[in-house]
Image (cartoon, rainbow, N blue to C red; front, side, top):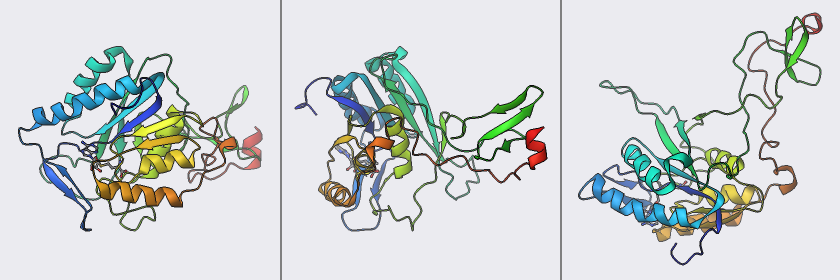
Length: 282
Ligand SMILES: C[S@@+](CC[C@H](N)C(=O)[O-])C[C@H]1O[C@@H](n2cnc3c(N)ncnc32)[C@H](O)[C@@H]1O
């Protein structure tokens, strides 16, 4: 990181070890990384802090950082990032809700991670609204072109055909054990998560970096979406997996990716019965 020039990156996604106090292994030989920090959270933060400072230096004024953590250290990291980036440059605390199975009899099952999002300079940062899912409202109709609307006293009130704007709670499934994209690397994140980050906070041709790239999910997503990418990892195995994945990755057509939203599937009817033609025109 220190070898890179100031303000050279458009977007950084960072998914470091979470301070779980465990050795993270996935059963395959070599698929392992250390997440034990003798000295606890203080040692962990002294590892994280200089790297976050470098990330701040490397971002362009229009750039954005996504720091992906969970309950183990995210609150300490928020304080650290407020100091490094400035409290006013905070954009979002995204809750990635993944609904894996498993019951906890002593407290609510912990089924989310947190992504802290900071602009290098709020107001100048790149951002594209993302859309998807279903409108939570009764009485939705669809016209002959599949565009959603509600009938009001003043006529039809049309809604965005790509669905509601995505909020700061993201319901994206965890990688299942049989997912095609699964590499077996511990801590691998779904492509759908990274594609949303990249679509929202960068443009085609931008440079996206991940300094804890693991199995290379960020770089694969960036390549698919027509962005340049840069990644590294302390584990040689992680780098080898990343290289292999990238060699199989094909670029989606960059001409249809320039708003970051057009490639999302059109709104589904969300199980509601389409309105009869009579209802739809009243
Ligand atoms: C949670 S994993 C990242 C997973 C990745 N996002 C993916 O989708 O596969 C964290 C990664 O950080 C790496 N790591 C730990 N300490 C590091 C360091 N000092 N420098 C670079 N990478 C490091 C680990 O080897 C591990 O691959």
